[in-house]
Length: 280
Image (cartoon, rainbow, N blue to C red):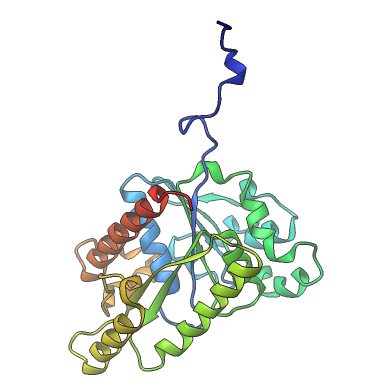
């Protein structure tokens, strides 16, 4: 019987290269809680020892501000990764939260879509930039801008799943339906693994009959894709960014903090089910 050559040992689950799960937080409508959800979901994940990277792809840079990232630490940012003028490693900035880092936004990001139009492989610049460094994290959360342009397209091509924050208001369903169609188009053209991970209702006021009606309509329309957890209207959530902190650090006992902890539990449970799902 011939001896086994160690160099010919087939790879096992223990020695396969690690790849993070990439989740794009997206909704083309502004003011629905994308950044707040990204920041606090990332914080809650890091609190349970997940290694998390946030990519601030919104030119407004609110996620970077919410983590207290000073402008001097945004000199190399998401713009440079997308345009290839810097690699992902040099753009990553640690936050004050253990296990949590961020690729900040920068002022140049606002004009990057015009530059990307003429670039080769313009829809996959973020995916290509992330690939060499992805093994460092368990989850990558991308805070998308409130549009469906090239920045959001880059996020959707790089992502495994999309999480949609949805404000409990009358016109909410119309915007989400458009995003779902976009996800379908991206899946068919660029990223066959992309799926809708879930929809989280934000700014919910249970005392408001319209808010309750919208929630019921969304759950009826999207079914199990809607998380059980809802994010309430909460003044602490609104105050936290001005202090450069996620609400989980600003006021851990607030209803907003408890909601984001519950949401993180649901997201991680769904992610575990997806990871363990047998290949088709």
